[in-house]
Amino acid sequence: MNREPESLKKVFDDAFSAISQAREAFTPQLTPREVGTITSVATGIVKVSGLPGVGFDELVRFPGDVLGIAFNLDADEIGVVLLGEYWHLHAGDEVWRTGRVMDVVVGDAVLGRIIDPLGRPLDGKGPVAGGQRLPVERAAPHIMDRAPVTVPLQTGIKVIDALVPIGRGQRELILGDRQTGKTAIAIDTILNQRGQNVLCIYCAIGQRASSVAKAVATLQEKGAMDYTVVLVTEGNDPPGLAYIAPYAATSIAESFMEAGRDVLIVYDDLTHHARAYRELSLLLRRPPGREAFPGDIFYIHSRLLERATHLRKGLGGGSLTALPIIETEAQDISAYIPTNLISITDGQIYLSPSLFELGVLPAVDVGKSVSRVGGKAQRTAYRAVAGDLKLAYAQFEELETFARFGARLDENTRRIIEHGRRIRACLKQSEFVAVSVPAQIAVLLALTARLFDSIMLDQMTVAEHALHEAAVDIPPEVCKRLDTADKMSDEDRNIIIQIARQTLAPFQTQSEAEALS
Image (cartoon, rainbow, N blue to C red; front, side, top):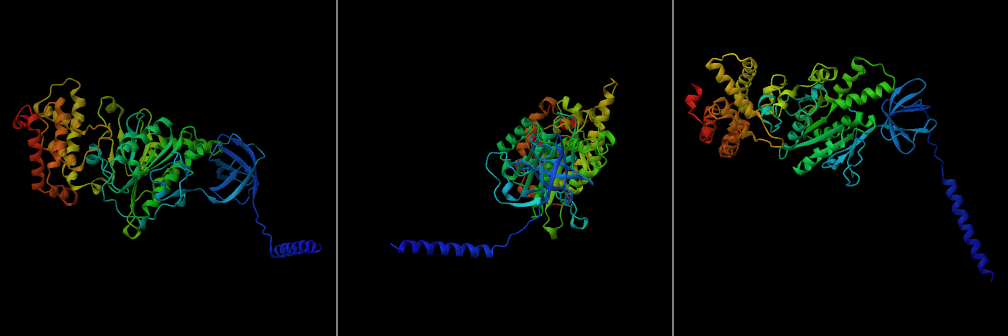
């Protein structure tokens, strides 16, 4: 009967001894934590006091797990840009420092995914697993880390590849009024990278949900999501998310570039980005400048686009090609933001509303479009024909305007105009229908040889399509030389022209000699 109390006493003694040892071994750790207080809340921004040690661009955390970026660092308070819904925040709520800057998940884990700038999935496929994280704001590569842009980035669009070539590592601006086909050119370019060993990032900034859904559906239908990352902010998202979106997308692209890959990034579009930054700046009481944009808007975009480059071989030789999109109003390319971006980029593709209304699609205005890299990033086969083609097209546009006045035209002028109309017809291209390099070369050579001049305009589409199909008969060794040779030989030129002549003969209404006479 006495054994049970003795056994219980032993158990209690052992437990007390264990607790005493644990208490003696425990050393309390005191971790200092700065906690601030919200003083005011506005649309997309808050003012916070009580965080004297916070750094510029540091993340701070609010109730409800909402994040913000410290933007204004004043003596008594800081201005914070919010990255989430803010309706539940009130003056007096606590704010905590995180001790880190804004970062985003990068690497192969994000390929084929649709995410927001915070890395949260929007495609219903669950969290983005694994992957490294990089800050969204990173310094651009140094000058000595860069290499010349020499490798072409084929868009599959004839007028661009021939007359406004883009190189891997280049920054080419796409601008034009609303509904002129800017996004269509960017999506076509992404679709044409299939099988080209180029990864793509499509960054939608403040776009309508329906527009983003249409673009994503096209990428999925054409099988482009296998090598594409889509980063989305919609029009109803907080302006802070729209502001960080292109920087987050660029960090994702840079992770691939630094691994030696070739990357294409599309910013659609930087008009919404500039407006989001203007909204944040005015709410934070930064002084407005021209067109109410703050004075540092140029720096905001330049530090973004300077990150696009071609790295030297010692750093892997990767490249990041940027296609920023900007929206003009009433064809005014001299407005503040368009002129800023024109001066930052390496050229621009201008889409004309007038050509769009005439049904000339893509509506690229060759006279106002330019690539400052030019032939350095173009296959030699294009260079052999592009110069003459651009001159003939420019002459045609000038004479076409003159001919509208009803003046009597001499025979030579009429031939120039008719030839120009054939060039315009050949430069038309349907959406999402990429044209291969051999087919483009065949069409361009046929144009310079004036093989289309004797074909009626209403037969041009059928004749050109027939030539596209006949381009598969170009000998493989000729196609290889078109890609690698320093100069197009007369023999290769004659082979392609002969194929074009045989293909187009059934469509010609008169002899070639009569057409050229």
